[in-house]
Length: 413
Image 1 (cartoon, rainbow, N blue to C red):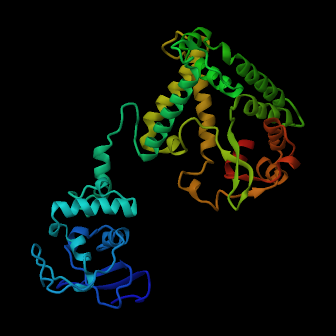
Image 2: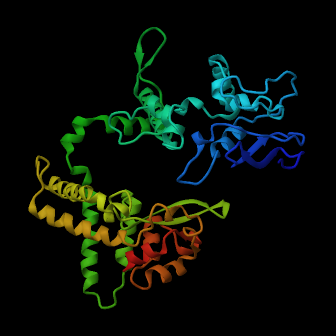
Image 3: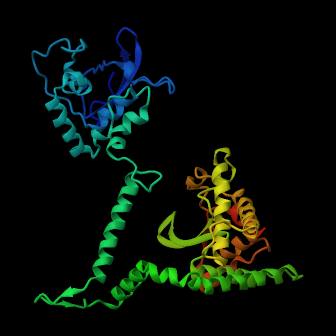
């Protein structure tokens, strides 16, 4: 059967040969009401696990933007290689589906035309793999073969490829700023830089000066560590405070964010409102954990990573006292366990990666007063935190979005 004859996409269902297997198909471009029959080795595309048949044909036909060919006389009744009947209504369509009927030249030309018209490269596929046996390799095998994972990376994909390319270009731009210029007579002269270029060049050069970095050791961290000590002291005083006024502690935690970019227990940033893209607002997000997501704290297959992570924390604590140490001390291991247990408690209230993709569940726009009431509940002064982190009052900041209310309530607890 056919769909509407004047539509840009036509659809229909039919039966396949003697087996009477159901077939669904879509044609790009009107077929002028002509009956279309698709016959192919359906078993190749049958996916038992999904109970679907010929699903790939839909994608192939639509992506290739097949259009009906003019009627041609003397079309053979049977395909010369697979003995399938030809149908005039399908024109060039059947030849496209029957790979065996294409010679190498036609295949090459067709693939080049596909890439030009659709942006999809058939070279990324591995057509030697049966889709019903391993659809992932069938769809991606070609790309995987031509793009092995580079050394130093746990995985590789097109996004990482673009990221690395961007980083390399940025490196070249920065390196060019630090190079001396030429006066035209072969003499080297200092390149003239703007104020901003000078700052960027100095920052980049400092990051590359490994000798100075090693010589300074942890000295550059002392102001940050001093602020950490002050924050801990405020927290200790709070434990003895009968009124439990958390404004000072919240302000200090906000200062860690503002002065050093250290997010404690949760993170926040500004981005467009998902339901009003012309307006940006403060986004409050779950945080406070050192491993990628909550699954690393609970999945059985992540136990080895948890052990190594605790050891890493202990090693960092040890190196703060002794940069030559090779093994963590017992005191550092004890502190690492405290840190890990705190992270574990926070992770319990975190959304999973899947839940985090839900645009409705992660959209909870509210005033700062409502945020403080729903998430702080008097246990933590979020208003003072935002004041310390941004220097702005609740009125100046306006409404905010709390992506995971439960995680922030856990922080306050």
